[in-house]
Length: 351
Image (cartoon, rainbow, N blue to C red; front, side, top):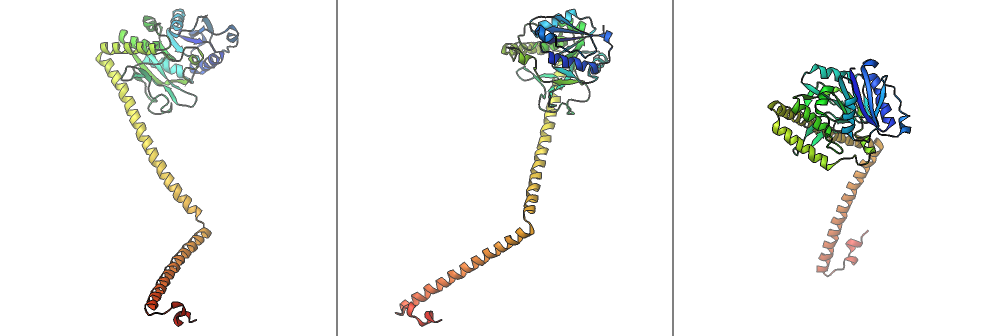
C-alpha cells in the first residue's frame, strides 16, 4: 500500500467535498490508496456521505472526538508507506498530493511536508508555523496576503512547524513520534513537528504546490469547547523552549532563516502599501482637478466672470460712495465754521 489518508469527521458535507477533491489531487491507482475515517457524527449523517474520490473509504472507528487520540488510532490501523493527515474541511487542488509526495521523496532530510492553504476569498491561511518572542506558535502571514503572493509561492523551504490540517509524512516516522495526547484542543501538531526535528533529526518542509482551500477550524468550530485553550498554549510554549535549549546549530539556523524570510516579506509588503498610498493620493488630486475642470462649462465660466466683474464694480461704487460721503462731511464742517447751513447752500441745492 502506497498511501493511507487519515481523516476525522462528523460532517458529511465537508467530508464529501474533501473526498471529491482527491480524485484530481493524485494519480495513484485505487490499489495504492486507502482512506480511513474516524467518524464521530450520527449514523443518519454517515449514510449521506458521498465518496467521489475513486478510492475506497472505510469508517475505521467511531470514537469520541479528540484529534490526537483519533489520529494515533487511525495510524495504527493504516498500512500505507505514507500518511496523509487531512482535515475534512480541506479541499485539495489538482495534482497537489502528487507534488507533495515528490517533495517528500526528493529531500532525504524531510520528515514532514506542509501545505499552502487559503480561505474562500483567496487569502493565505497557512504557509508554515513560526514562533513569536513568547514562544507562541502562529501561522505566518495568515490573512495578510493573497495565497498567490510571490512570498509564499515558488520553491519549497524549511519551516519550524506545520498545521495538522494538512500533513504528509512517512508512517514509520509518525509511529516513532505520534501525536501527544496531553493537549485538549490544539498544539499536538506543532509538538509533532518539534519531535520529528529533535528526536529524528528531520526537517519540516513547506511545499507551495501542496495546496488547497481551508476555512480555518471549520470542523472544530462546530464542536463544543474546541475554540482554543490557554493550558495548551502554556504546554506548547514550554515544549518549544525545551527544543531551543537542545537544538543544534543547524536547527537554530532554520529558525532564524524562517523569521528573516517573514521579516523581508513584511518589509516588502509595507513598501508596496506605501507606494499604493502615494498612487492613490496622486490619483485623488488628478481626479479633483479633472472634476473641477469638467464642472466649469463655458456657460458657467461666463457667469463666473460676470459675477467677478460685478463684484469689482460693487467695490468701486462703494469706494466712490465712501469718498463722496467724506467730501460731504468736510463741506458741512467748513460751512458750520462760516455760520452757514449746508442745506441752504446754493452749491448743494444747485441742480
